[in-house]
Amino acid sequence: MRKFGIAPLRSENFPEWYQQVIKEADLAENSDVRGCMVIKPWGYAIWENMQRILDGMFKKTGHQNAYFPLFIPLKYLESEATHVEGFAKECAVVTHTRLQADDQGKLIPASPLEEPLIVRPTSETIIGESFSRWVHSYRDLPILINQWANVVRWEMRTRLFLRTSEFLWQEGHTAHETRAEAEAETEKMLECYREFAESYMAMPVLCGKKTEMERFPGAVKTLCIEAMMQDRKSLQAGTSHFLGQNFAQSSNIQFMGRNGENQYAWTSSWGVSTRLIGGLIMTHSDDDGLILPPRLAPQHVVILPIIHHEKDESTVQEYCAQIRAQVEKTCYNDRPIGIHIDGRDLNGGVKKWEWIKKGVPLIVEIGPRDREKNSVSILCRYTMEKYTISIEEFIQNLEQELAQIQSGMLERARAFREQNTKQITSKEEFAEFFENQGGYAATFFEENRPLEEAMKEQFSVTIRCILADDTDKNPMGVCAFTGKPTSQKVVWSKSY
Image (cartoon, rainbow, N blue to C red; front, side):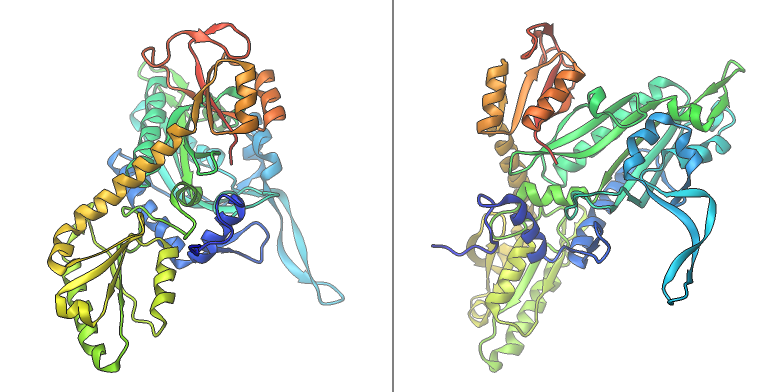
């Protein structure tokens, strides 16, 4: 039987497979602080690529980067009751300013703060306070701000990238003159996330609206993108919130309107996090390890020199260097193609498996015979196909090869989602689906929180999103649970 790079296999134990993919790809590890992680260079390089691309997309839509404090006064959270209620159990609280040694020489907290500080779980309240000082007239609007930062949400059960007590993210915060502008902003940024997920991560997503039960605390409306992982669970990959005037009122963001009267601003917020790396892993990786879409891979090509005799070393190394120099002149997706020569003094098979597990798109092996034939031996990580071509063909076709890998990964992930999505029309069919298979169950549904809670209790499923209202795609139907007419269609799933 073929030996795989990861144990256990996905089909045997998906959660443990996920952890082993991270370990073998050298992406991250748990830290000594419970629930926190160390992101290692290969994992952080993926995040840097995500950050670079998203940052460019945000700036093209008029947003500017800023930075706001890590600590939030408790009174700021108290000013928005629904918000604090939603995050109260997740807050990390700072109560003292310094440490001092006790009689046994142990360090203990000293100098209690007059008011506790919250380590930011999200920044709506503290950014709102800044906006209240920046906004005076309708001429000051809109304010379009993004922040790249870390946040802390105290988690009891953690998993690398998917759910950690501290994680990295971006959070956009905007203030507008009118409701229509703020709602348009909310929809525009969701589309930005959809484009990034599908075009760069090769991860197909559903776009829609959260129910009241799943809505962001304090928001009027929460939009989301949802992606199906290979265990058929759903991952909320990004959210965009229309906050109405709720946070403007609690933070006193007022301005003089065009009619000469004071009024509250309309605000939005939106964000994605390092959870996207978890989504990338669970969407594409296989039983040999990580598979990276070329648009996000830290390196596109890794060259492995194959040297069995000392006399061949200089010739092979020179040939590898020539190939690298030619590849470095080419671009893919408006970015120079990344190429690395792994010249470590390690067994060739060991090095090859390391790069397979790291998910680099193309692994190129070059030995003395390749030099003589002016060729290269290639392993495509996405298909695990091996082939040999001339160096000229390799250079000429490299950009096209990477593009085909990128599109192929998206198509494969989309086909998997379609295969595991079912239209459900009755309670009995719903129960059978989640008891025996699982995936995405699409139903007509008249919003009903007690019923949502009952389904969550019985089947551990939630409504991932209310699908966008499109009368062509969402004609009138019958709620699968109540039998009442409705045009609202939702997708249910187990989720992370």
